[in-house]
Image (cartoon, rainbow, N blue to C red; front, top):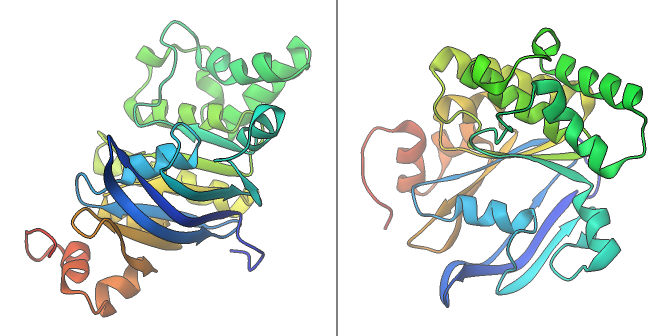
Length: 255
């Protein structure tokens, strides 16, 4: 994990829907090369925050800097240049069912590059190889397992060589063994390629395995209630609700 200037900066950020504030004046940074996890209970704003980070929604106020450039205020070619810096894997994998894995991963290259067909195929195969799916390049999504679909989604998100990957609930719907395999894929890509990961999840085993740092959101307090290494928050957070979340000793809601 690098000590360089933050690759993502969220500053004085407020967001919500129909005038109702869900996240109120929050601030945090993501450092280059780290696996950064956004977590919290249901309805706390995890997915809302992710959608703002990738530019799908505009916040009520504040800035979201990607590599020093504000995706909130950017327009035209400047905004497109920011969008090219990251890839996104959605919760379901969001693969096109009528296309093979190779075709799915190749699609961004067809849309956004001038590479010839041979180069596009070679690049797509290399991305599939990174997630262990090159032998399945000719398979349709329905012909592979859920965990493999998630890995294929990551391969497609990497097609344009982004410096940041956003993953939305990557372990959702997976059995523990498959989830653990996916965790190792994420760690390998982060460590070997230096890719920065921002992961939304509530799966504790995955959090303790992959996260360099986390932020924990809370619906009642409309913001970040904890930030740091998950092991430290579990063992030493001054907030009993945060400790309970990580230890899962009790069920309940935040104050």
